[in-house]
Length: 173
Image (tube, helix red, strand yellow):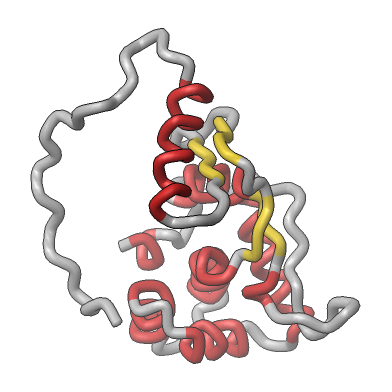
């Protein structure tokens, strides 16, 4: 697992290979994607959304996939808003260490399954995601939150807006 205290990022030098203005980003991403999938077989999907507003740009072929650990951020924000006790340690383990037991504890602290679904869905909606339906044992067939199908563009919109949401500071810190 990653340490709970991350070192500061180094200064970012000019990045070589960034496209010049006027470059076709789809073509540029297609080239990069082919290079990546030659080294690591699979499919790639990337969405980019400006922080706070804007339409997402999408590149690649993976348009929707299971949320897995990506859903831990909106679950943690829902718990912040519910004033769950002793949340900081669970958030650190859940998000920084990708600890599923901690994520499950946060989910469970939101109350009944329906209460947790409602709280996380409200966070997603406030963050600009109007479509995602949280998977759970109440789903048909029964499932779990990490198996939620979350569109790449909806994840990007939510991430871009999360810094603007009330109570998000402890989650993104």
